[in-house]
Length: 334
Image: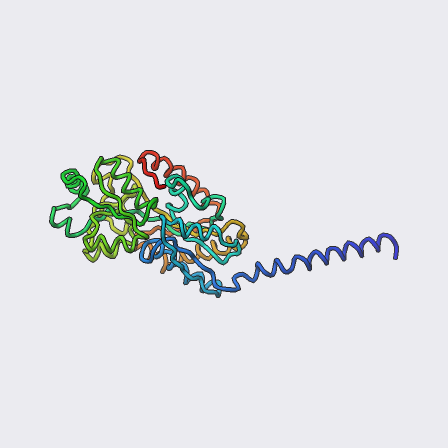
């Protein structure tokens, strides 16, 4: 064997060895998912975060041939569930249904956060954006003739210290919407945090709470049933799901008042981008299917399904926006 042919033999052998060494890793990624995937919802069942997770989970199960299982891990304004996912392996088998609270607000609101919303996660895709809605207990509204936002403000000013404001937890967009309303109107309402929208709404409907600024999808059924009374949406524009409801800016002249929410899937840091992109593509397909799209829009949600990079840019922009709101409101959680 001459030098040239001997060299070719060695190079060819090295190349073959490299391919064989890479094969297990490539096969492992292409085989994903080989077992069920968990979607952690950092709030109690019944809220919008839970509703959206349970809307996309069956679609992902069908697309990938493995179960995508929703697990509720409520507490600390979404921080407990977010921390669980942040500390999970980046192998594609644990996802978080994150929110504007867990990834846009909490870093500015909490003195110590048990996770880094940027370093500990890879954005997958924005699932949907939703307006919040200002709702009051129906009996309170009927008894005191509270038919609009100005009626509520008048009643609150005449009854200082008597109103309780429910939220889905400290630091959520629902909490901050209420804080923004309090700061712009100068009224006082005691904030009562719950472990999610579901239990907070039930207490509001039962008369144990007076007012709440909830995500529209989770509140809509109780609004339609007459269990709670809607006064206005907190978005910059009216919602097609409740077109007769004015915005708070329209209803009370509070200039620039806007406190909408968003919800999206995130994976632990280190999750391979091919897995991230595959999930994003299937979520986007599901959200653009006529049945899912119509279902979410009827609940007031605006489906998205954008790319990982686009979702990451949104998270950065929202963090800057809400950090300013937190500072202006003076809200802090130890």
